Length: 430
Image (cartoon, rainbow, N blue to C red):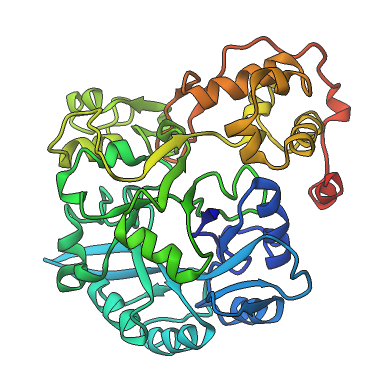
């Protein structure tokens, strides 16, 4: 069975998360995207956990969950949360985010009971815990050997295992004797498997990709995902496929172009300075405009730790496919910065209605069939992104990369007055 999974999201009790990020809303848009497995997000938060238990029901013998009021929905949920550990290591403050997966509500209750000793779980969907990374893993794995912990967005400058400002140079330094329980790491938006393959010390870890989304919109949820081919659709089959890093069952990840991530290159947003690693090194990582320290990008951080050349490949491990959200591809053709316009959604809906879901549009639909549904420039743009020929100006210091499709504009653009659509009405389009 083909399973497409986004295993790291957030609920509405996390900071900077949409108030409309509810379980039914997540399931609704996950189906449109083409996901059939989604993390619940934030099971450590007491109010969100209450919402999980009220809206989801366990599916027998799978350790997964389905909508209580819509059991025919193809979308399943896996219990998941993200936590932040802050601790000292060799007289330096370390701040690392971790994703936790769990097989049952009973295990979740035990995890929460243990973790509340280290921080206020009700303060945020992604709580801050005053404990070390090894402590976290030890506590979590003590509740169930079926739990899974892996470092979140491993390369972002802040709050990650390899973060330039508060991270480590190896997974082993971070998790110490508990590294034996770490089977994967999350690449994050600003890196992809090929970048991580440059580090031989990461060969033993599976590379997973998730959206870390704070919004249910299809340009956020599922923008990165994992594709499995499984005999059974269960929690254990998914986590075993990850832990074994077996390409027969863990087929590939869906990745945004890492240049599209907002921390890919080194830079300084306030001064509009963006630098490739070689250029940043020439400036000693100091902003040439304001003379302050630059935010070191993921590409430069990978370069520092890599022991293999760029372009290195690995055999026998899951591959990857670079895509960009369909909404953002259409928006780039239309020439609008926001995907939430009538011009974007009209074309998006035509394509999804024709082909079934967004992934089928992005991955499978032939050019001629795409062009029979929408104007040729949209079809050409989708195929360019699929083929990896679209250009992206790299993101830096919190600024997302810019997509350059180099295709003709559609024949007719809507008038500005017709474009804006209120968020509360967007569900009417499906």
